Image (cartoon, rainbow, N blue to C red; front, side, top):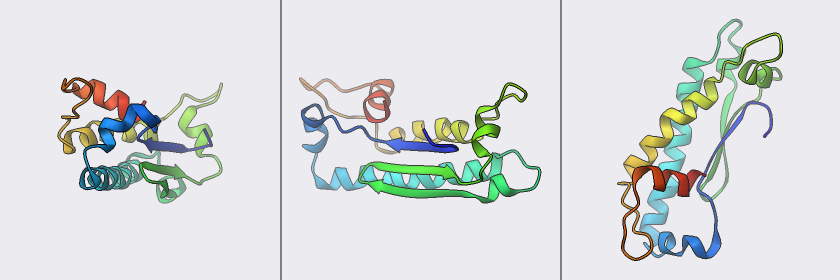
Length: 134
């Protein structure tokens, strides 16, 4: 993954996703909207929690929609990768990953976490999160 990049992706698995898409266009739009809101929330949390020395890390977060169900939250500061992932001389400070992890559960909860999947069995929160976000 590129330096300072965190993606929110609802995985595209072709035929395995048929039950998801069979839910109708309203549900699909609601899901895409929830992902967009989640990406914005990740950006806000990351701006607030980024390590602060000069302020460049907290000021340079952006959200980009790559396609339906795929949003990218990233920091375009040249040194963001090394601060986020650390080096052999510096411990990692993964503020963007922490923001992502904090928001993903809320996205699932906002969609009701009641994805009907195969044989009428409802997925658990963990199964739905794994199915949507890998």
